[in-house]
Image 1 (cartoon, rainbow, N blue to C red):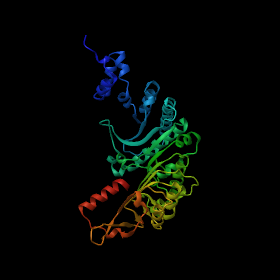
Image 2 (cartoon, rainbow, N blue to C red):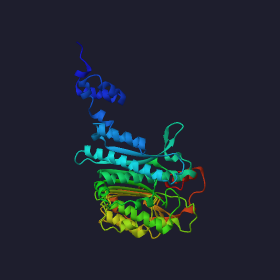
Image 3 (cartoon, rainbow, N blue to C red):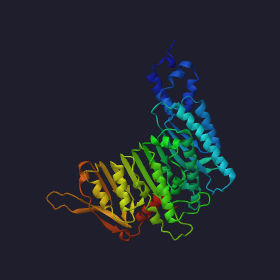
Image 4 (spheres, rainbow, N blue to C red):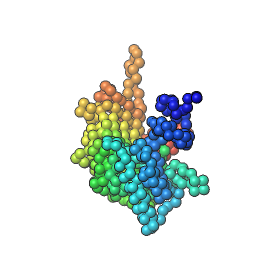
Length: 428
């Protein structure tokens, strides 16, 4: 009698499984009991490492059912929660609030099921995203496909998805290892209004417990929207306080945080307020820099952030960051010199530095470097980027300011660059 597949070593069966789709693996498991057991190895479990769930009553009910009846829940490592918007502005109503409450309760049930199945010391990664629902084709499109005049619907969806997730974490105390809030290349044209952070009590017992184990946080923030259903913008000083206090509240319970990325997206001011939006953005790090105890970071990236000299220096010093990236950061008062001097000092113990497109009051920084040529005096080269690691960290950072209006004239290259900048940093 010829040997059967069930008699093959587990290593051969695992090699075969790698070549099959999940549906084929499930069919194979139904053939006999021995194969059903042999098929449940590393490759089969990898199908359950990542789960994508739409934040809707239907999607969450299916997710809760799966968490209760699927014995491979313990394999879950990354959960992607997707808020859906049709591109239209949502109206305020009692029904909308009731739906949001139902969704939060369902997500809480699912989180409790995940927490109960996790082994001691295991941490979950949660990623929040937004997608545009196309009813005619039942498809999901990235936020960048939404017409720019409908940008408010995307921001409304990010706020609702964020608050639903925070309420569920508060109720379940699910331990987190990584939290990504609308951050990544697939989440262009999508950010969380900065004042939404101030509406959450991060010190609440369950939520603080979830954040206490957090080691990695990536977040994309934008100018504040005072009422995510009405669409009015906050006045300058008020939105600055909301953004700064909210970010400080988020970081304070994250005592284990090692990796931090903050991205800023600019919005327009549709009400034509007299407040200068740049002056309000510059206070993002103010409350955070004043915290007595900040987590000690291994790596930190500030991308598109507006700040002032003293806040940037205090933030870098208090976090004792080892790998620092500043990309398109704008100082609205003061200079980068004090921060640069600290970064290259022995006290900072910096391992890696990367600076790109930094601004002092609209003036672009150009860093000076030396190109060594044998037998000739080394000419000075300038670039808007500076990358250092290892022993070269302690070398002084020399730079001068180049006013932006003196940059290269209009051309296809500069127009394409401007489009990329607008896609990454706004406004919509």
